[in-house]
Length: 420
Image 1 (cartoon, rainbow, N blue to C red):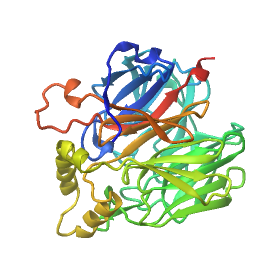
Image 2: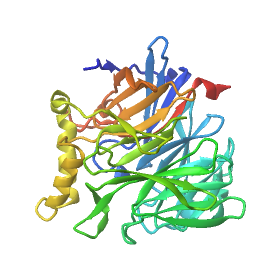
Image 3: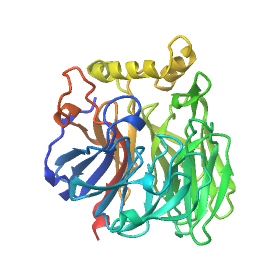
Image 4: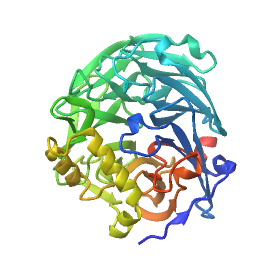
């Protein structure tokens, strides 16, 4: 078993050559309803030194994803709480925010501005309600509606290599039902194309040089056959689609049988050789070969029995939260499917994974174990694993037996090359 170090703490985390920014949603099962905060993990691979800075923000909820401005000075904290929220990467204790309800209403409390793309150091685009809106951090109340996104509930958004297209995934909608679609928005003509797929895809990644993108299936089922708000993990096969952004054509796709631990993906990144994504349900990092889009390898972070026993507080909260989302009697199949997805563990898995600019280090954050692991890439051997502080250190009033998870979700990485 790899040794686990304790995290150092301090305001100088962002001064390290690598700064891993991770959105936080606090403890509990459903990150869409939790707290909102930021963890900045600074790391020096030469000396092995590391430090962290953790902030939670009053008045914000559902912390979900970090998107860093091109100059790496600002972070967009995507969330499900209907706010546009920003922080200074050097001083993450301060946030700027504005309610998106002043721009456009929403038909679901989980329909928020969870992801964004930056156009330059101060302007960017995110989804609000039924539209894409362009914001300027210097004039937050003067956002501009640039067109409809045409999805039920838009989620992850990326910009293609040429800058011409926004490509984005979508979630199943609490009332409109299963999504099974992704979107392409032409920034020049401000027109939208919807691509129908056999499975819902929350998350996407873009090819580094061509106007292609990758959409990954996120397969869930509604509780009691109708409730898409409090969904359950599905033990179905998973997909990765390679799509041409100019035409909307699916070029290739990859499928993983239901018994392969590739369920409930979160962060997606790409190297010269592989499409890389982490899984919160199966506790793995999956790496798909781009050349043949067939072969793959898996990094397994499934906790052993000793780790599961030590994570008893997390497991207890996880089970209690699951029971509040569905009846154990009426939804027995959902609970059994979830156990098959998680391979018998009662804690969730890896939610953040980001590759360094030089493609030598892969940073990951395990929500259930509350650890950050850095791998050498492409060897995928552990360089360091750090146990992060408990939530109790940052939130007053928690009981000793309370779930200690910080609530890792999507991440973003500042590498040394980003500073030049």
